[in-house]
Length: 299
Image 1: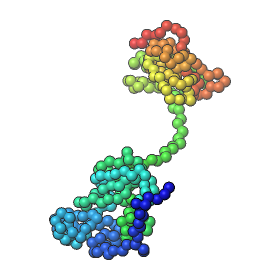
Image 2 (image 1 turned 90 degrees about the vertical axis):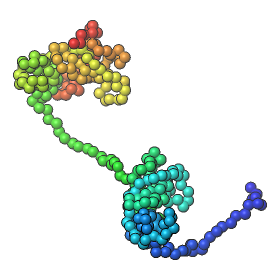
Image 3 (image 1 turned 90 degrees about the horizontal axis):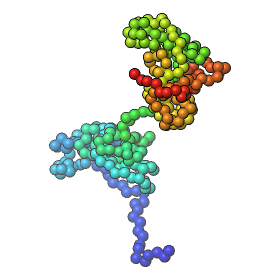
Image 4 (image 1 turned 180 degrees about the horizontal axis):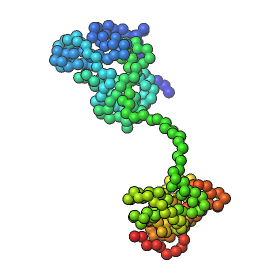
């Protein structure tokens, strides 16, 4: 395209860079940055200015020359998100320009804040400086600020062996044979399944073991929509089933029936894996399936 004759391009450049003296106040601030410290200067009225100025902007009076170390952490007072960084910006990824009031300061410092995304930003959030590896005495010695660490993610893995106790061992050995074993408390006259050696209600020792049928009644259930390797399909139903002649229900999967047909009171029977595949595990029971009997009564 032809250039516009009414547009002239100009370049303003200082070969070797623009050089100015810092003066004692700003020079002290930059020298402290080189040592990875942030200082402000106190005014005659006792306010701490960061970054420091030679004169109090409120009164025009010279500052006292008393330097105060502040921060390094601070609080965001306001911010503006930069979704597309430009050449010359301190970060090559989206960031925020923020006004940060460092601890111990009465004024706020403008600097880049690397928060990851704008949803993580909020007024009042705590931030800390991230320093460059080789400070040189420049405001960019602080590469940027980052949010205070408020959570960590740790990989957790623990290996352990769980050994079945006496009552549970006997119960699982019964499951391996295709039998539910329960126990009856003489004091409470309640039959518990799985098998127990002591009554959870009165604490009495239980000595009577009972073999229970593998049929029962659904007392309550839930429809699950997340996959489970044990489930016959998704969605599937898990239910509390009160085995016949027991007083405490057990939890198991329900299969061989559409989930919308499962109901409280439905009569069900255990579906066992083949005897040759059984071990001392509840996996011997694939699920419970409807028997077709009339619904049972729930007390």
